[in-house]
Amino acid sequence: MAALYDVAMLPLEALLLQRLRSTLFQRLHGTALEVGVGTGVNFAYYPPDVCLVGMDESWDMLRVAATKARACFHLAQSDVQSLPFADATFDRIVGTLLFCSVRDPLRGLRELRRVLKLDGRLILLEHVRGLSPLARQATDLLNPFWTRFTRSCNLNRETVQAVAAAGFTVTHSERHGLTIFQIIEARKHPDLPFSKNAPYESADL
Image (cartoon, rainbow, N blue to C red; front, side, top):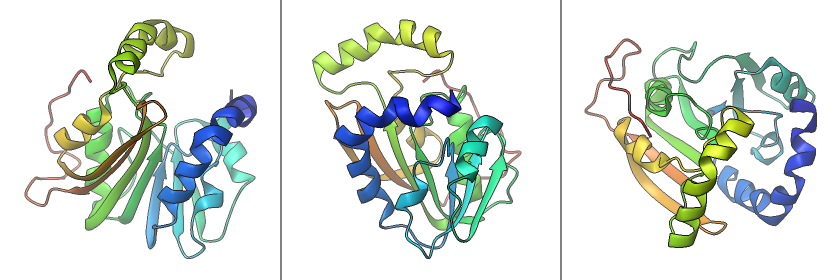
């Protein structure tokens, strides 16, 4: 899949995602963690002064991403549900089209909260359950077939709700592409524990 991913995504990139990525990444600065870097399609949109750590669970994806290396750049193989980074490490955490495929989104988001600095920001671009009646029905109807076909991707996740449940305060949210693509920006709630060993309750999201 890694070898064909960029080609398969070209129509959607041209229609929508390139514009959203460009807008989303231009405000980044400091030390950033990108979770689920995939083939590194986002690398071209980072400002030159950003020091980037890119993480993905798939070695195949990381091998493709490594060919798009940039300055101040490091790649790591890891699962977002158990990150190998110290608490409060990153100024910004970015993810695009990731949490549709994470087995336990709440656990993954709580890990992001743990490694984000107190004044840091979480920035996500996700495809989610549709907001309009037609889009909502379509994502719900197609989800069982799509999940079996892809073996991981869910079409009807309510990711903004998971972000809030993981201990973030959502500061901005906007919908695009027939309401099934969502930009989510959030900051960590300062009054909740974020230790890697803190207990949490899983959620079926």
